[in-house]
Image (cartoon, rainbow, N blue to C red; front, side, top):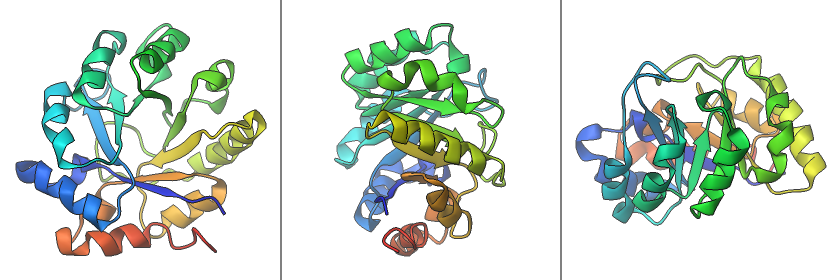
Length: 222
């Protein structure tokens, strides 16, 4: 069984004390910190930009797993690299030249990811598999936290698992949206190697974070 990474989404954290929240989830066992960047254009919400990420960077040494829900992407790649992003994930729909964008991300010293919306087919990444370090399956429509898990995305996970295995490369297969103690084991069984969770991690306050994180990977070593 593959080890599964847990990447708590700070979209569900207490924005009034983000630094403290990040230190708390780091201590509780988070493997990465998931940061959702939204522009109010590509998705109907506004969140963080590079200045906020730069201020959060000193609070943990864990990788910053930054998901860009913005368009265009290319003009901001170096700003996110400078701010401290370790993984930068983009949507194919955010620009006309996905291959060029992935090359630019890697050229800026970050790992490159591609996010697939519920209606975006797995096949769209076939031509760029050699340039991808992470694939993110959206199991909700992007833009807001707290949405219900879309069951059909498990079939996409299974398809992507086969595609990744055929490459022989260690590509992270991540899922985001509606993950909790019930849906996470099913996503793991389908082949994901990273779980993004917001409300399922941050519910109950800092004293509950370690138990919440453990609940997301009950069958990792089964």
